[in-house]
Length: 220
Image (cartoon, rainbow, N blue to C red; front, side):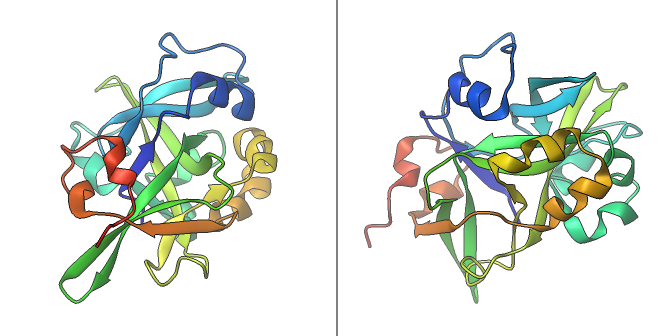
């Protein structure tokens, strides 16, 4: 699964502009590092709105249009690729409401009995990570929100967790944002690019901790 993410200081507006081909910056393009992105927080999300790519702040945790409060969000931070077309919350979004969440990496916890060991996970080439997602708008609550699509973990990561985010390559961006679902469907089921997982300290377990020290390798 994907329950925490991070964006370090190298992820600037220039990176979003150049990688995602966004012409107009959002009202606030002074993005600050966030080393412990948690569900319900707002993060920059790239989508195609009315024929133009834009970068907008969205709530992590999908809040369907019919929801009367934010209770749904905590249960819908992720969307399983294998059942997207079966779920009423996700099925209407497949054709026109796909998005990309660009981050530096994510955190995962390896379970062994009652023990959970945290890891930071990054692309091995140190490029930003492009996560495939779905977004929606709730008129009643006046909120835009998204869920990260997850798929079966690649072999290089499977020893830590059996699920991983659907990760796109730069060459997939146009297909994911502007193509039809028939073209994009297979991208939701892939985790592209090599991943590197590094054990880190338990500081990340507390969501109030938010600093570059979270990314330091575990010292033992």
